[in-house]
Picture 1: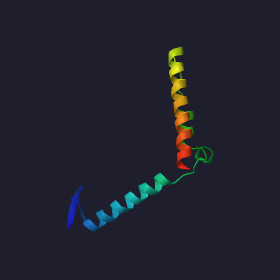
Picture 2 (picture 1 turned 90 degrees about the vertical axis):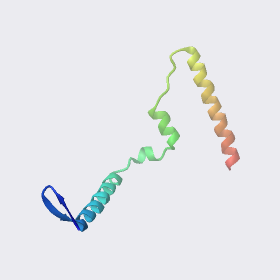
Picture 3 (picture 1 turned 30 degrees about the vertical axis):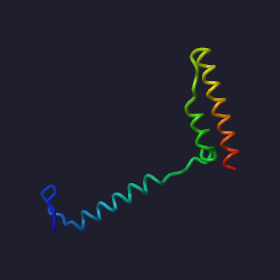
Picture 4 (picture 1 turned 60 degrees about the vertical axis):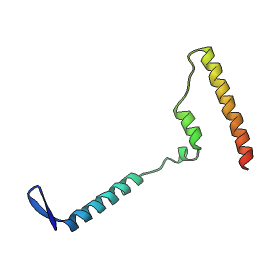
Length: 84
């Protein structure tokens, strides 16, 4: 069987091979490249905290953010002790 593409007859075998090679090439290209060793050593949570700084606009917001950070820190301490 064959298909007519842009006025030319192309066999299905060639279409299949072209699709497989194009997909493999795209995967290879996306996985390639030099990795940043400085950021890969840090946990994901630390990298997110550095990338997205949260600043308060008023003293109430600052107090709320501090209480949330304290709650998260306590939950991480309790969760860390429970898993180990």
